[in-house]
Image (cartoon, rainbow, N blue to C red; front, side, top):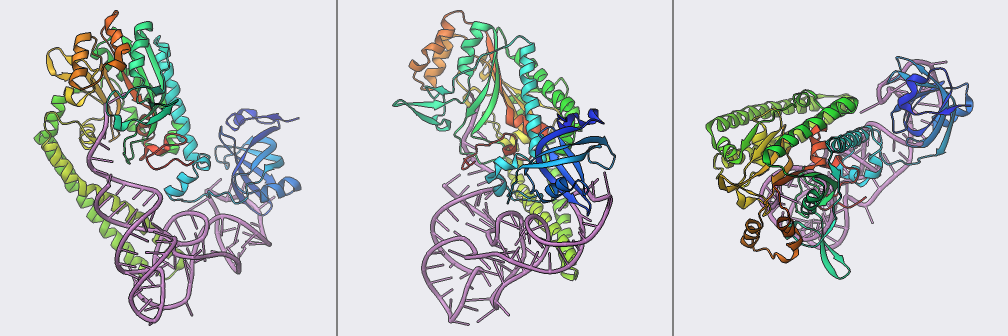
Length: 499
RNA sequence: UCCGGCGUAGCGCAGUGGUAGCGCAGGUGACUGUUAAUCACUUGGUCGUAGGUUCGAAUCCUACCGCCGGAGCCA
């Protein structure tokens, strides 16, 4: 009798026959041997089928890739096997064949892969990303749970538009118009007044027409909110929180990060304290000569590199024209195509850079920090940077103005390094009833839908605050991904709803 | 919404006015230790859609559709 086993446990099960249940992920045939790669979600195992086990041999030789298979055999250590363990197969049965499986073990375009996202998820790269995502979420919840935070989930259907109704998704709700949540924060503040320290974790929705590598219309956010907390407390918490997420990924998902070819060195440098600068200091930094000189220098260097690679492309093309052998032409064509794509992208980037440099130099106090400015700022540091005290005009009504400088609010953004940008936004909240009312009036807001929120300032108001961390941006950063679309099983992007 | 690029076999691509091509996948066969195995043979096309120019259009022009990249937008 064989027992059910998972591939991740095989190394410790030498000698006894086991049964694997999974899918055929790859195959190589060699005359009287079949090497079948079987995956079961926990790992991939090379299953060796010999011709003398005739039935198993025939089945394993014929089954299309991604067929569901049940394999019996004896695990044994063998250094020729990928992963060091393989299964010596006694029986190989196909539960369901996968005729004409669309995704091959080769390169595909992004449109094709996105249209087949439900199958693309099976690939080694995608499962690695999803495992890192799982670990980040799990570590985030453990972090707050261990500190005594209570998970209090907040509604997805919400009545009003706090600000910027253009970025909310309206939903018909029994004849009324309501909106999908952009944040749980206002409700979370009520929970914090009940429980002291709380957090919520759930999906949030933004209807911004942003087609960029860092925007989703539906993304997951984890938000803590703390009674009797001020801005410095929030900064300390955010710093410890991010360190914890990075540590967990490095400790529990090293193998997956390597599969993703993530350079681990920048992650291993992540440790407290994070640099903290105010918005005003950031503005001065952006305008300053040091940054300008550095950016100009980088631009010159990258231009030179681009020119050198353009030269390399021309050389390759000449080589291609002179080449007679078909297979060498093929190889060169692939190289040329890859280089051409790369050059095109870098050219577009370089074309934008002078404008970025100009906009940094001309940055005016009061402007919001856009994506370009964020990128420039994060390049100045080798770990996340906390930017505080933004002008109140570009921030939300509930943020508390600084007592020593009412032009700015007690908020913070945490910007991830390596160009990944904002992963946390948070603030100390306005806790004074009259001040909050005045601010809402100044914004032209109707207070009626917010009477419940104002009640929190009428009955036992305390200094409090919190922040939100975007899960997908964090996953993209820790995994080193170019685009946020791979960080969630079924990304919702502007103009893409299938599958 | 704007700017740029792309759309040719299931997939990835070449083909710039004159008979529709290559690689991979699929199929058939060879090979006892493969690591994206290799080798031989082989099936497979309304060239995104509609109109136009031309003796002749995948190729040139116009419009539309789709996707990608960037910008704007973005508690």
